[in-house]
Amino acid sequence: MALPPKIVEQRLNDITEAWRSLRANKTFAGMTLQQFETAIKPSLDARARIADCENQLTAAQSARDSADLASNESALLIVNAVKGDPEEGEDGQLYAAMGYVRKSERKTGLKKASALKKAA
View 1 (cartoon, rainbow, N blue to C red):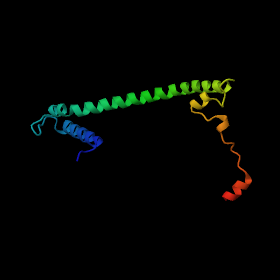
View 2 (view 1 turned 180 degrees about the horizontal axis):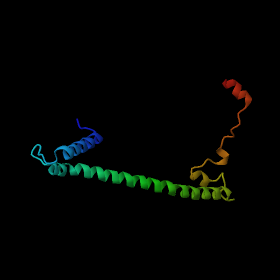
View 3 (view 1 turned 180 degrees about the vertical axis):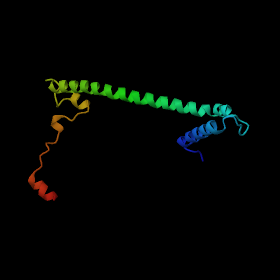
View 4 (view 1 turned 45 degrees about the vertical axis):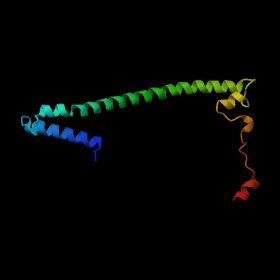
C-alpha cells in the first residue's frame, strides 16, 4: 500500500536533513548524500510543479471571480433593459429564454387563511 504524498515528502525531508546534519560524509546503501538527493529530486520537482499549478489555479479562480462581478453587472443591465422594453417586457419570450420566470407565470405568494387552517 502506497503512503500518502505528504508522509512521503516529510519522510524524504527528515532523512535528508538528519543525514546532512549528523553524517554528511557517510555512505549508506552504496549512496552518498548527494546521490540520494539526486535520486529523490524527481519527487521533489514534481511537488514543486504541483505547488506551482495550484498557485496558478488559485490566481485563475480569483481572476474569474473578479471578472464574474463585472459580467454579472452587465448581464443585469441587459435583463433590466429587456424587462423595460415595450416589445419584450417581463412577460416576453426573450425574458423567459434568458432563464427568468415570466410575470404571468409567477405565483402571487398570497396564501388564503382557510387553506392555512386546513393544512394545520
